[in-house]
Length: 456
Image (tube, rainbow, N blue to C red):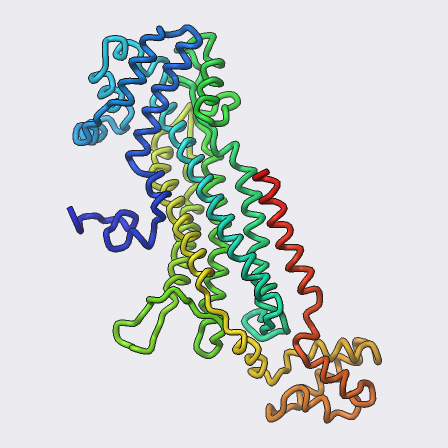
């Protein structure tokens, strides 16, 4: 019924802000049941190959899983009673199937086998999607870094004007982090996509001596990593994924913070170019809604990461109470990150960079932020300590009526050490960019090389 949803992830008003369509599909109930049905059909075929159940049983189980018309109200009602949806689903498959289906369906399995393996299946789909999104954002940032490699701007540290840099170099720092996130994702991928088949208490007793073979062939058929030993009580790999998401959110939040801060009217170096963000009362106002949403989603992601360790609150062979948390924590954390990545791509694709304003903002400090540049040129003539003390005293006495170049040109000690040409050059931001080009190129190459190696 329209308007009855209570979660932002399903809300007709807000869902588009908090979800990315493909990720929402991955964590839908439809896909969850599809994974469970795939598990049941696949393990039946594996057990047939190993001579555990008749071939006819596997064929009929597979057919029943493929043609099952799920009775959703019945499934919801029985899940409410049982507490887990696996037995209610297995009952529906059995009811719709032949006697062979009723006899051999779910052979040697337990609820947790399906829960954890379906989680691994959806985690695989999730990480594959997130990887594509990370690469897409990386390509967007790479293009911007190269385009603006010589777009000079004020570098700020502790929110105060510091020295000269370029927007291209600043953007390349985001790209460096994304490259490391891709490396992290690839490292955690095998563990994150580990399925489970262990039976009631994890020792494969219900399938006897062929348990290890069933487990390996099942995971191979599903395209998942095979667990090592008994892992029924282990959720560390799930926690690691959610906390990895938090690291990515850190980069995205920094990007959003910079766009918001550099978009302030008094700074006006950047502007969101997607449109929208208008005020309901102030006609002149355009709010940075993309940045705001990325910041919101980042905070959500960090909350999920803080709560993820609760999944480790296990005892004995398994404890359902903590494990049930992943039904909400994992899907929501995946949705939040995917939505944020999608929004970040749009934000930086349409970002308006005002080159003239970036250059003009050096005047906010009367160009005093070039003092280190002048100091280092002077240091070659009189030593760094003496040069620093000279410039410190010179700027301390400045009353703000003159810019750096004027102040320096009126100081005889400086004029005795440097020519006017040297002074003018030292006050020019473009003369003090250091290894700007090499650093950008190094970052872009690292990204390109890693992507190329992983996709070759």
